[in-house]
Length: 124
Image (cartoon, rainbow, N blue to C red; front, side):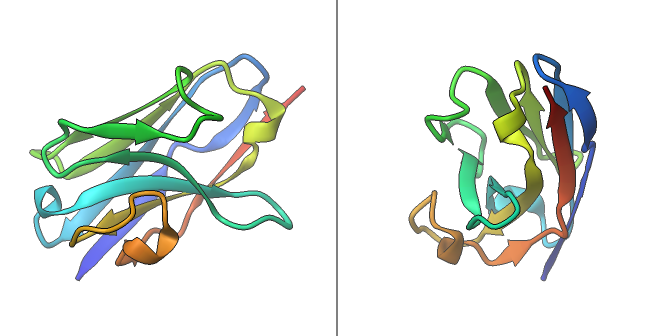
């Protein structure tokens, strides 16, 4: 079992920045690939970013590429999502997720564990 807890969300003006954190407990976090997803009201949960077990591979949704950066610190069991140049359309609840086995990195069904989410609101 892995427990995931997100933090760092909040209200920010357009063009601002936030850094989300995801704290993992339970099995060693470096056994898992990690992803960030988001869900806006009335919309399906969508992929945002992915990082591999060792951190050597990171992948992003086109909508956030060059603005967001995912990273991890396995010694601290933390995964981060640095979000820059935020836009109102980035407003959503952001979730981190852990994937034990291989799968489609952008598919929610590939992930085994989920956090409770943290709200990000970007005002125009």
